[in-house]
Image (tube, rainbow, N blue to C red; front, side, top):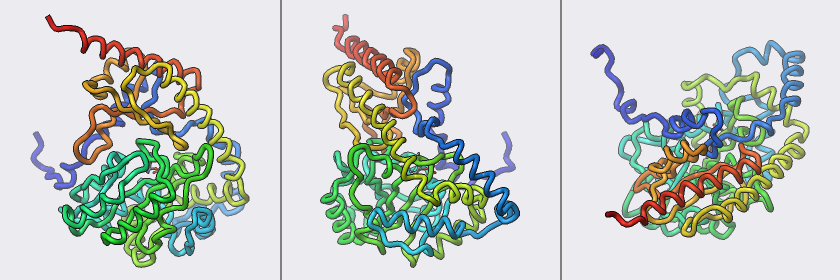
Length: 402
Ligand code: PMP
């Protein structure tokens, strides 16, 4: 045993992502995996990106390959400020910070807003990657009561008493990862009013908002309370996650600290990537491209709805998502999704057990299924296998013990 290295307290709090561990198993050939949180690689606009790389390297090779500003590439910041106006937000380019994926935005938020022992409120359940990003900064998580539309406004009332000094509430109003749920317009108003009343600012994470199937989601929370909401966006689900491009839109009072944190973290997000993505999106490319992703995901969603109705045993509960990439399933009493996973993998499928997505009191009966990386036929096959595994387990549980 080495005694040379003494690790930080925060390092002891970090754990291997259960999802990464699961993904390793599910990468075995032949597994129909509904476990990934990845967009469909068939949606990546390879030709447009290739042409844009060429343009950037021909037009401005030296600037594109040089160090650049920590805030981000100015034309891309302008474009982002423009684009979010469709969500009802009025943003100046000076409020936009380009980040290395929105995951980095979460880390920077943790860095400048969390303290050891200070409360942070999260939805029940919530995005595992955010729990992982905030955890090293040693917050105490409070789980906000949530229903099919996300956080319940009343949950903010209890914060005053149960978690005074809550630094922020981390909320995902659009097609949440992991549940797929969306917050309606009235709920948004109530939630913002309740958060405001409780004096708890909001960190709004919106990587899935463009992936709606029937109608766009209501306006962003940030449009209702601009000075009290920090907003995170991403290019990962509408273009490609491989360029690691996201952005934070910060209230002006927070921007300088975020920028300092960003500088310390990586100086800046790769300027080449920013220029290439700007070259792709500058003339309205997303206006044709995103509808093709929506159409594709909608038909996969439909295939999963049909398969779940056909194959899952009585007692399973789910809500059909109206956008995004995920179904969230609650199994009948007595079943434990984590315990079922090895059996499911042996039978040829994979999912993510839901327990990983809870800050507190995990619900062992829940699991997440992605519908975007399999074909409709594979979805039918995969869900049929899941149904079989569940029926077999339920039948065993019902067998009288001798
Ligand atoms: N937030 C949520 C809710 C996510 O699901 C993801 C990706 N899985 C991210 C943030 C991070 O996305 P990226 O860093 O690729 O922008």
